Amino acid sequence: MMRKLGLATLATMAVLAPGIAAKQQSQSPVPFEADILKFEAEDAKNPPKKGGIVFVGSSSIVLWKTLKKDFPDHNVINRGFGGSQVSDSVRFAHRIVTPYEPKMVVFFAGTNDIAGGKSANTVFADYKAFVGKVREKLPSVPIAYISITPAPSRWDKVDVIRSANVQIETYAGEGKDLIFVNVFKQMLTPDGKPRPELFVEDQLHMNAKGYAIWKKAIEPILPKL
Image 1 (spheres, rainbow, N blue to C red):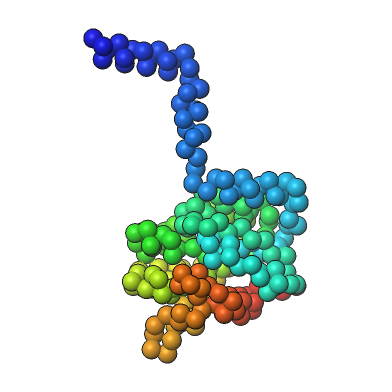
Image 2: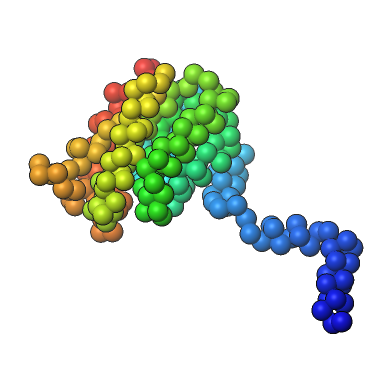
């Protein structure tokens, strides 16, 4: 009897107070929503000039602190959010990529996906979804994908990393205005092992030497001024 009364009471509460469910949902926000809201607040105060180059993806984009200095002649917009996976950039593409109507999108993500157990096929499928999402509103924008790096701390996943890189490189070669920026080989020693001197103490994120490799590889593909 008590159990029936309890269920009835809950049902009555749901009818009388439909806002309870909404409140509970608001307490479990979409992952990275806070990061995106921060970008939107910054844009409201100081809107970026349209027609620039959007760099988007995970923490290696976030931590590229010399991005503007490395490409001083270009209007670069950093929209990286740490810990994100490819699918997260798909979800937020129409909030932190397409509104700026960029001349080019430069994308790096995938390492968190693989570390979290996703397959190379899933990373590839998610990247194709990202391209499709961006081109819903920007059908001809060039999109460059920076290859997943051979970080020493994630070397145990190297086979999956290589497979994801190969699939995305093949896709880029067959598509229009898709570019694969292959920095993987440059970040290896002559005997095919990761170069620890390119990474900070965590052996996951890059130091200035690592970003110098990225800069040199990306500079030639940027839109002509």
